[in-house]
Amino acid sequence: MRQTAFQDAYPDDLSHCYGCGKNNEHGHQLKSYWANDSQDAEVSDLSATTCAKFTPAQYHTALPGFVYGGLLASLIDCHGTASASAIATRQARRVMTSTPALRFVTAALKVNYLAPTPIGVELAITGSFIEVKPKKVVVKVTIFANDTQCAEGEVIAVLMPETMSGS
Image (cartoon, rainbow, N blue to C red; front, top):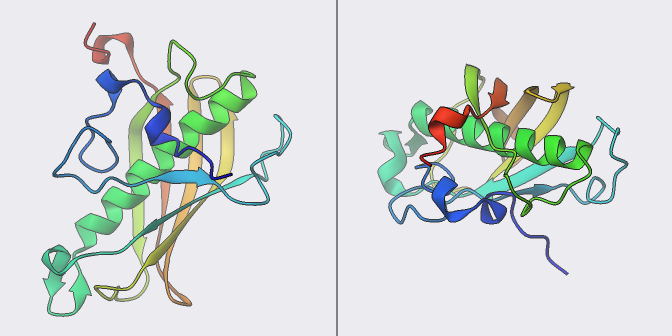
C-alpha cells in the first residue's frame, strides 16, 4: 500500500504553497514520504529518513540543459518543512491528518550547490534529522541526479505561528 504524501495530509487551508501545495495548480506539487526503512520507525528514532522525487521541466532552466538553482532551494525548503511536520507529528504520537495540524515553516535555509543539475532527470531528494524539538526541527536535505549529489541544504523549521493560519 502506498503511503500518503505528507503534503496531501495537510488541511486544505494549509495546502497552497508554491513548492508543495496540493491546491496550487501552478506549483511544483512536491510529494514527500517516509523512506522505506523509516515508515514504521519508532517515535523516538531520529535516524528515520524521508524521500521525494521531482523531475525538472525545460522551463526550470538556468542555462540550456541545467536547472535553475532557485528550484533546488525550493525543493530543499519544501521537503525540509514537510519532513519537520512528519517527525513532529510522529513524536506527538499523532497521524498527519489530525487537527490541529503540526505545520512547520522555514526559519532559516542554507543551500550548497555541489554540481550542475541536469534538466529532465528525476531528482532524488532525501531528508534526515539533525535536531527535533516540539517547536523547532532541523533537517538536512540532499538532492541527487542519477548518482551525482547536486545540492545539499539545511532547513531550520519552526512550528507555524497561529498568525499564519488564516483563521
